[in-house]
Image 1: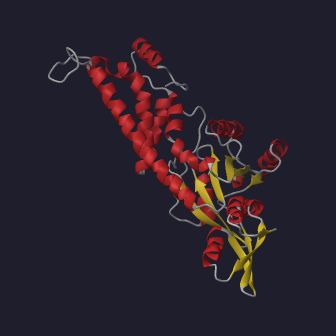
Image 2 (image 1 turned 180 degrees about the vertical axis):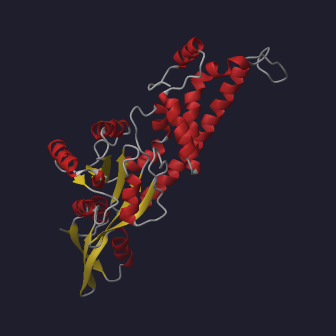
Image 3 (image 1 turned 45 degrees about the horizontal axis):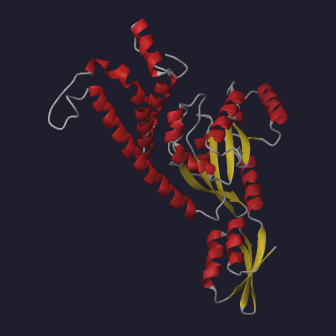
Length: 345
């Protein structure tokens, strides 16, 4: 077993020297992903990554099958088994990419339907507790939680009541890991669109893990790779309930010096996520300021838009108009002003 990714030639040469089966880090992680995939999308993503990993390694895997076979319709005097396998795998890769592209379009449609809602994505190293945070905040019992690597491969979005009349959409995403195989990053790119298009990222960190600082850098590297490094981000140190008083104080001091605005939470203690709820409420208020809009009483379409895509705080009659106080984001405000609606505040 090798902790780095081996080239096809390296793997073949080492197997010939030692006479044993050789597996590198990328192959092991792909195998783990394959056992965790539950939905059809996750299975397609993992299969695509496995085929991309396998294609340049076919020579090592199928040397004993290189037999010429002829026949009607075969190219030239014959075709090797190796060439046949390459052609079949190449076709399967194209099919999977097309299907995942359809999934990506469907997700883009769903995201467009969420316009006007504050969108938050959970990111972090695998097994940092992202799913537990989502389950506790949303109260959704169907959220799958297990203490193991890559328990979650599919993005899951739930509405979260933040209190004081505020709501957000919170999305759980696949966990990251050190030296994540590039095939997996590419295959899960459609899923990671949820991260790129979020209004806020919550970087969940396992504070009880001895290597949490290394994990933080790994996640930052992946966010940079997928183009999400400039999205507003809050570091959330989870599992604080697992720390002894001495370690708790040391972690808070260290984090306070490195990342002053971080949060310290626990998804498994009463009120352990209240600091996070308050930070999310602040986020909603920041991107959706309160404005006043004078709506004709007969304009049901405009009023419906404000209720559907904004957060109406109150409304009062003003002759043949309604004076509406509402929270709206910059996108909706710009569209309304372009249509001639006067927005004050």
